[in-house]
Picture 1 (cartoon, rainbow, N blue to C red):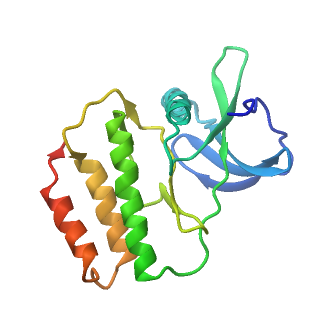
Picture 2: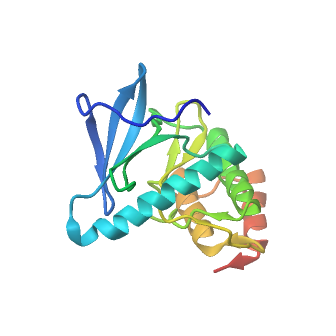
Picture 3: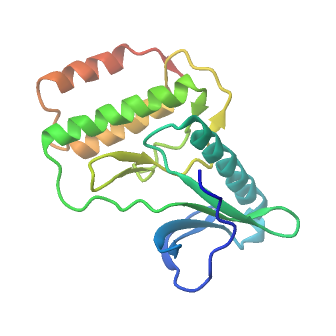
Length: 200
């Protein structure tokens, strides 16, 4: 990885989303777009939000060291005088514009399964894939990127696919095929999913 980013100018930031932890902005650094996650100013939530951001930083660094594909790329972080992280920098992922064919949708679901397989093989559990499918982004290159690892766990052991991740997959399938599952190999894939050993 290139030298981590340690600060980004406050000017030129575009608000993207907000949540429990704080806010996400789009900005630029060295001529390219980046995403910035900032800890909330709400004192009642700050400690937990701080812990989530610290955890996300740790997980993203682990993902980078393992070269795990289809996961958001860590770019750096800014810490305060007490060494507490206040801004987390990640790659900016441009969401896909336009529709997918059924063939492309099947490939997206396969990528999702493959990515979960690699994560679980390395004892990494995302733990937050069930919220409206927002943490799975489809790019213009028809690839997926998993984002928001603030709730992720490292060091867990899995004998199969986790229940939460299967729920995330079910949401993805429902989103991809709202009028029903297509026939052919995709049904075979769904049958294999049902055979998986589900862990809690």
